Amino acid sequence: MFFNISAVEAGDEVIVQSFTFCASTHPVTYLGATPVLVDSEPDNWNIDPELLEEAIRERMAKTGRKPKAIVPVALYGMPYDIDRIKEIADRYGIPIVEDAVEGFGSRWKGQVVGTFGRYGVLSFNGNKMITTSGGGALVCPDAEAWQRIMWYATQAREAYPYYQHEAIGYNYRMSNICAGIGRGQMTVVNDHLRRHKEIQKMYEEAFRDVDGITVHGNPDERYDSNFWLCTILLDEKLRVKNEELAYAQAVSGAVGGAAGIVHGGGSLHTDCEPNANVEAMRVWLDQKGIEARPLWKPMHKQPVYKDVPAYANGVSEGLFKRGMCLPSGPCVTDGDVRYIVECIKDAIA
Ligand SMILES: Cc1ncc(COP(=O)(O)O)c(C=O)c1O
Image 1: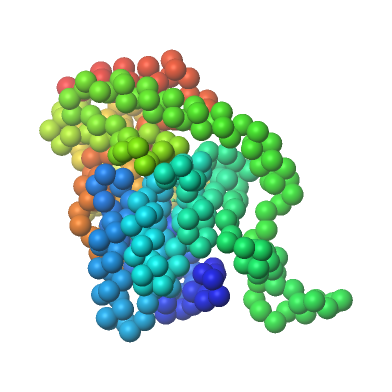
Image 2: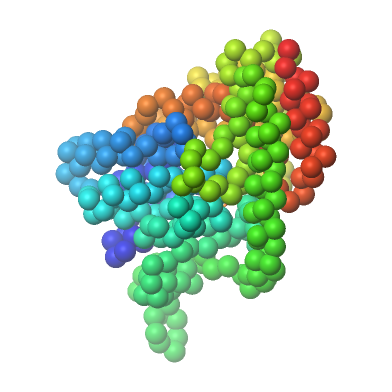
């Protein structure tokens, strides 16, 4: 991973938004560096600039070194407040690497996310706005950076007629078959973006008058989310049918997506889990053939990151406990949305 010319190495620290999928933090860990986890602001759900600055100051005071990078995450497609993040990052001279994976096509003040930082990361995994079946892309600042990254991504071979290696490279290139699929997908990207936004609008309208359910929308006109996933919050007081049965049974399903990996669960509860009404709603919808999922569990609440520095304000934990993701995507029809909404309303006790 390269941030301008200074690579992240073992012992370094990288500031990462805590409210995210583990793929934002794990690359830092793979390098032997430490992710420093920073909580979110309540309106856009993304990295809180005030906490970010507090984290930078405190880490510098404690370690005598600057964090190597700042990784904001466009959660569920929602842009981060890049103006404030950039002002802080520039003031401390720390590069931004945008995890724009979920925000492909989202815009902040008209500019697409992934193009503000030193680098921007995109994913073309099967569940993303467009797919190449797997893999992604890195938005680079210039040709020099691109050359250097692609050199490392293709096993870092020196310029000799034979195979001479003076640095450790990686086999991280995208296959031509995947790239071909991606080129085809680029012809439908605008249709996909439009459909995700239409679905969001339908959910917003459907739940406008439903007490206890809030749809997470663009906080103001600076934000233009792609609404990769539509998300709702259930008020703690909202009573959902069969709530008393929530978490009564261990989950025994696949945990490895299409690979069908199963992994024995531990206890029925952890010390940080969605509220009973959210779990009851998830189960209710599941029984109706609708897959709804909890929000990402913040990294600072994950046992695997219990020992890393965290700057928490309770926002992401509170959202995680109340939130859920609803189906969205080009294959979700208007009729599907009506059915989902109807089932959710039916679930209210
Ligand atoms: C926020 C975030 N970052 C990174 C990734 C990783 O993307 P990929 O699946 O292409 O490795 C994901 C995947 O879902 C994600 O949600």
